[in-house]
Length: 555
Image (tube, rainbow, N blue to C red; front, side, top):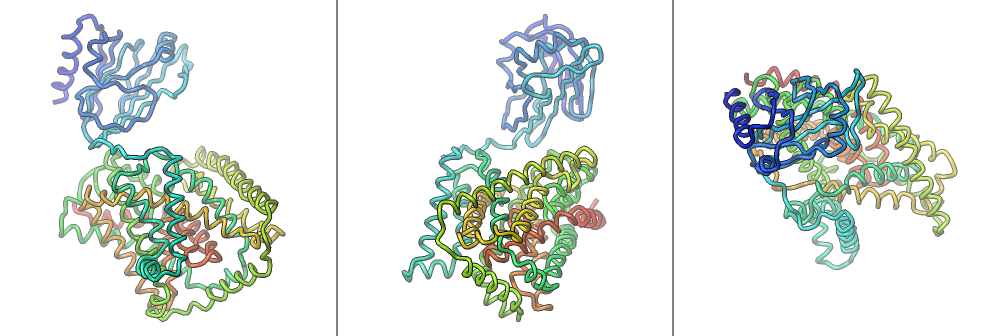
């Protein structure tokens, strides 16, 4: 089969123009690539899909063959080289000249990588504008063309949505009060942007708003919300917060095993597979994400070598199921008093902390001036700058020494940790009095913008793209939720500890503070600290989950 593909590919070139010159053929698995010594005439290239060399590309294309576009700078480098190494997926070849590189379209949800390394007299020659690496992901379907893709317009839409929700939720009219009694305001802040994405009005992939909110506003909000933290009262919350957090972790570990085991009876093929296509390997990456975060997920992907072309399906399960669960928690927050009553929970320590913070806010409250706001801005974004500067340095150090699978190699991890430490330090200084000028309110504004951008990432229609895998994830999350509810009932833990303990696992530092803040801004610190613990134990917990899933998965 491989030979027939290669003959077909080579024949296409040779039939059109017999003067192409010598071909070098590379085969990697089911994929094939041809390197010509001389440039191919334009009429041949017109019959193929062209891809700019040196970039990462995600594209839906039904064209049978592709060709790389080399710019003038690329070709000058080739001419100066006396040796060119071409790495195609897992295979390598050494040649002296490159005219064109052609390849066969490997099909939907497949990936090819080509790395070209020219050298002269043993020294590597660099390209201008790129690193000589190309990765092409072939999409299974054409990407959506959303109505609005401009960051500036989407940000305005999200801001107006948040403004309308908060304005209407504060009105005294019966109709609005009835609406927000049934549907919480925070839930709408999350789900309205999700609805816009689902109806293809906005496209989260076409904007950088989530990156902006998570990298600039999230650390800023952490600093502002931790500013007035009462450390002594936080320590006095007791052991129930940690019990619920670790219950959530155990729920993720055992929930994955339970979901795989159940599906061995429902549809074994969904959770089966062999080699690097075994489903349990992909589910291990979800365990890493749900116990820790992105760095832990990367560690699992590298450790278990799950086939990258299938990894997109696991990311889909991760995002869809985690966001459905977060929506349920946000909805439950509006019913927290009823839930606490059913759990027979003692929330006195939480209530005391909230009262202390509110008393402190009242004692320092003053009419805010422009100077106050400018100082707050300097404190916040100066801290964000420190978090990014130190985070970049530390993540690069650990990346170089321990590899990208390490939690400590994550810049996001260090950004959260350093922002948290910075906020704690400020809470012992006179900066704490800026709470009276509205520091926590500004922090909450930042956090709600983050809520809207997270909601924007949710496409409800994705549930139907891989329904069986989604159901595996839903059973997994249901196990996690039920275990949390049972333990909360047994130890009479407040819903706050259940919700934050769960999100500190499943959502990490991006969503645990949001959930904690929804109860009260004074409690945000609890969510941050739990999420940081999750980063530390995420890889170990995911290892355990993966090995247990391996044991029950069908062969």
